[in-house]
Image (spheres, rainbow, N blue to C red):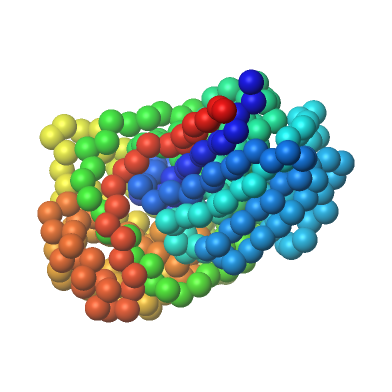
Length: 363
């Protein structure tokens, strides 16, 4: 029996430690948050897909066969269909689909990746191809393929795995990929949208390009150079030979790498030291602001205001150049949220949430 309705949802995420690290093969610690993307589909009598995205005032209609042409530069909904068609999926039923979300769009909280994760799961259910991705991790892999690899974009895999798996995650990429769910000791956060839109792929690509270029220059002189093993003192010495725009992001990567290790210790220690956790978030913000240069005056202002009203720490979230920050505010989040709003941001009180979910109804 085929379902008459499919509902899927997936969460956005915040990166606690390891921002701009996943594409370097370095560890990250991220958390799914209780702002989600929702997809609801009702089966049609033909094979056409009709999509309604009221949040962005977009609509689309297509017959899922052959190779769907892309109508825009980042046409993730169609690319997801193409990925599954190439894997042999067949869609013998059409759907009326409504896609809505709570996640700020283009603001650093993984709205696009959460959308692709939810959409990929919907397509797998609709085509009865769940065998291609029997676990959330496999859904994440297909989603990364559809969003990043299909368009040769610079993003890593953190967003997709965090959205699909959910909870608090420690992600290791090398020497072999490993996801570890951590028991979350975390209380309430406040997410603050600076309401300044950002160029995600441009900012991410710029930082990645500068790091890669710096790495290539260092490896020419030091073939055994390893970003995962080099010490802070060693990298500080080596980058003296590089232009600051190449050396500073490399130093930032090493400091961020070590800070992620400190963050893991704090998050897994009992009792949980919330003040030390907040201090480490601020230390990461210093790296992102001063060395990677991805923060903005508006983000800095919102963070300063939040700290003055009780937040214990915080940082910019995502690729940078605008978008969101988050602060850890386990005691008076409403007070912190009001302060962010009065300073020109849009606040969301958030907490760690579960991952991908789906349900079906039969008639």
